Amino acid sequence: MSSLQTHGLSAGYRRTTVVSDVSVTVDSGGWLGIIGPNGSGKSTLLKAVAGLVRHEGRVVVDGRAVAGLRRRERARLVGYAPQIPQLPVGMTVTDYVLLGRTPHLGPLGREGARDLEVVGGFLERLDLDRLADRQLATLSGGERQRTVLARALAQQAGVLLLDEPTTGLDVGHAQALLDLVDELRRELGTTVVMTLHDLTLAAQYAERLLLLDGGRVAAEGTPGEVLTPATLSERYTARVTVLHTPDGSPVIAPVRG
Ligand SMILES: Nc1ncnc2c1ncn2[C@@H]1O[C@H](COP(=O)(O)OP(=O)(O)OP(=O)(O)O)[C@@H](O)[C@H]1O
Image (cartoon, rainbow, N blue to C red; front, top):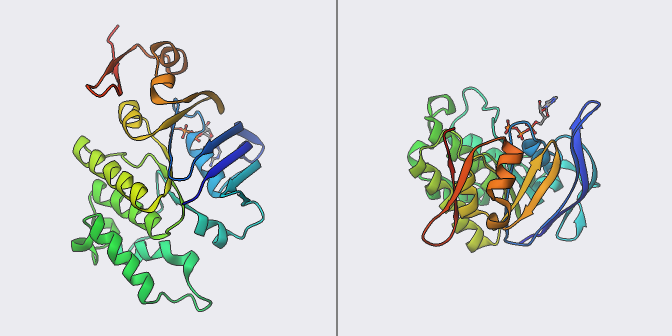
């Protein structure tokens, strides 16, 4: 269980700042969706929280500023599943997911029985156990996505950052993956921050949404507050109508001009 706060977080690459002054709070066990048009800085914001890009401002996990922490310590608090992971050639699914245990390994850097048990549990949970010995290069897109998620989950951090976790998944597999994240969130109290282009799915799983535009916060609130036709047409330059599911969740439908 961990809460996450950013205070005036700005981030970028070399001399270019692409995310400016983001202050947001995610309660322990909460789920924040980060949305916004292409290039608005969603991935960069997640990387800044994970400590992987240059940033200014503060990232606070459970009331503790993470700036002074070593990478290993930070990785125990914040898990991260990148949008386009570097998948090592020739590595098996099990060995890749074991990399998620790195922040927990002892001085000799060898994994122990507990690490293998954690990894085995997540492989089973994500329906990857039958692929445990397969090489990463031989996986389908959906299997690869689940493997990347398993590695981030094996980190067992209180805060889980997911960058476009459903990329390349069909609607059924996308739902199954988000259902699983939700299940683990409820069971373990994990705090989830996820970027997603599918606004309808984002509205169904995230409790709150943060809309980035040009690296700045353009809107923040419940999905119903953020996903209005006026905001979407202004920020995405899109023609959309907002429908609703029977339980009232917004459905974003494009309208042909
Ligand atoms: N490694 C990098 N070096 C330089 N500029 C970068 C780098 N990565 C991203 N950028 C730039 O930062 C800006 C924000 O990119 P980012 O990937 O954070 O946006 P995004 O909202 O996640 O985009 P998308 O929806 O297309 O995935 C873009 O202009 C992008 O070109």
